[in-house]
Length: 213
Image 1 (cartoon, rainbow, N blue to C red):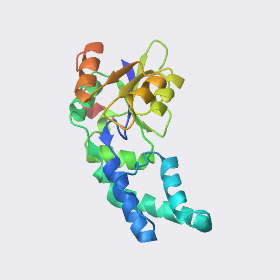
Image 2: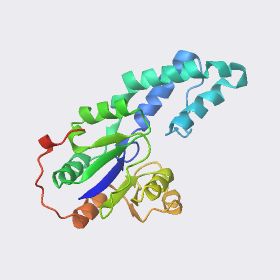
Image 3: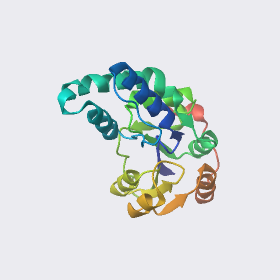
Image 4: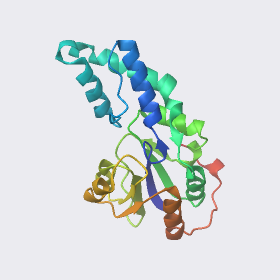
């Protein structure tokens, strides 16, 4: 049995449509310039804060909290279900869960939002818990892995004693992931699935109805 942590945004799901919709809707409501077609879409909480702080400028800095609150509300009510689950994820997670591995979800978004998505995708029974940022350390004599698409994910894995595995289909570049210590890189879910199927060959013996988040 292994401890396996999956990053949500960019790894299990494409979060760009959800964030982009919420940014544009908030900008329209607050009279701010929307993100341009060529502008990099922020993927972290701090990046979103910086996005709005730059548009408000020093003269309107006191509005930042109000704007961020509107973004959060828009993201929750309109943007959340615009996340696009990567092809092959349900089959991969289902097999790992039935093999008895402890699966955790790491997400930048508030945990209640992430849980709503898991229920929406009918994947909530696969995961033991949703982690805000840092994964649990693997118990002694237990293998631990973290799959993510950013350098910060790789650093988080190493700090928790987990093997850092890089997802090249997400936001981060090959160079970013390698510099942060990724031990292996994968071009897609199919390649990751094949690696994990070879590494973990336990029988699928545990029904998902026995697991709860």
